[in-house]
Every structure is written in C-alpha cells, then in structure tokens.
Amino acid sequence: MIIFHASDVHFGRPHLSKLSEALVRFVHDLAPDAAVISGDLTQRAKAGEYRAARAFLDALAPHPVITTPGNHDVPLYRFRERMLVPYRNYRSAIERDLDTLLDVGGGPGTPGGARFVALDSSSPRRAIVNGRVSARQLDFADESFAGAPAGALRVLVVHHNLIDPGDGPRAPPLRGARRILDRLPRWGVDLVLSGHIHRAYLGVGGV
Image 1: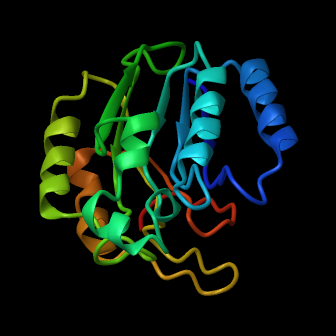
Image 2: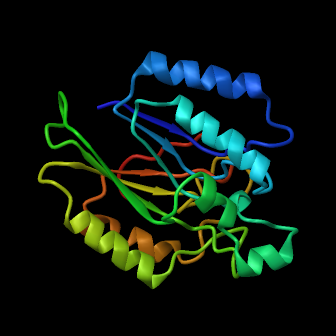
C-alpha cells in the first residue's frame, strides 16, 4: 500500500502556487492508495485561503483523501470568530466533520486495506498552539479502530506531534499526548501521521 502524506501546506501568504502544483503532479505520478493532509491547510483560516486549499484537494482526485484541521485552520487574530465559529470556513470548504475516518481497499501486502482515523487537535478556545484532544474524541477513536476491517492497516492522523523528536529545536508535544500514546497498543495502530513542527522525522517501534 502506498500512502502519500503532507502537512502544513499553509495556503495564503507566503505560499507559492507553483509548489502546490508540483505536489499535485507528484501525487498523480505516485498514484497512492490514499493521501493524508495532516492539518494547517491555510495560513490564517481565511475564506480565500480555504478556496485555494479546496482546489488543491480536488486536484488530487481520484485518490482518496483524508484531512484534519491544524492550529492555523482556525482564526488566531479574529478573536470573536475563534470563540464563536472557529471552524466555519473549514467546514464550509473542506469537511463538515472534524473527526473522521477513511477506509481504503486492500492490495499487495495489505489485503485488509487500511482504516485512517483523523482526530482534530486544533483546540481553538483552550490550547490553540500545542493542541488538545478530548475524552469524547478518544471515544471516537476507540469505536473507529474497534470497527476496522479484519487485517486492515490502522493509521492515526493528528496535526500536533505526539512526541518531541529530539533532533532539533524543542518541540513540545500535544497537551495530553500521553493519553493517546497509551491507547495506541489497544487501538492496534500501525502508523501515526502528524505535522505541526515543520520538520521531517520518523520513529520506529515503541514510544
């Protein structure tokens, strides 16, 4: 199974359209079974930025896509909007539901396909920078992974990093990340995809 993962594409200034156009071409050349965009689709959660992000996601068709909001996908300086309707533009342009799942069919090496579970960690009213996941969202993940098809690859998608990779400047993890890390074995998660810190890192094995 081939999974394409990108994060923090930040449509809006100073995003360069030629970069996203090149990314679309790369995805079509790769022909993945699924594409994951793990948050921060926009720079300031503006309607025009979301229109550009929507066009980018549409250009990835016919490949299945799953997204999750990042801290830049809710208003930062538009305080009233952030308190009252923080996800208005995201829901209008990208996805009505904030916690989502995606099932894709199997192929060589993964006959059971894959189940992707995306949790919104943006927490606009309480922990906008480092994020937060609620008990209700953990229940959603419990149910979603419990219902995964037999033999399916299990992938958790969350914008904020769950650990500090320790390979550069300090990168504080998601607030309450331990609650998620402790559940990974129960969920049978094979892969965690995140973003936020604008650094590529890979960890294998236990955390």
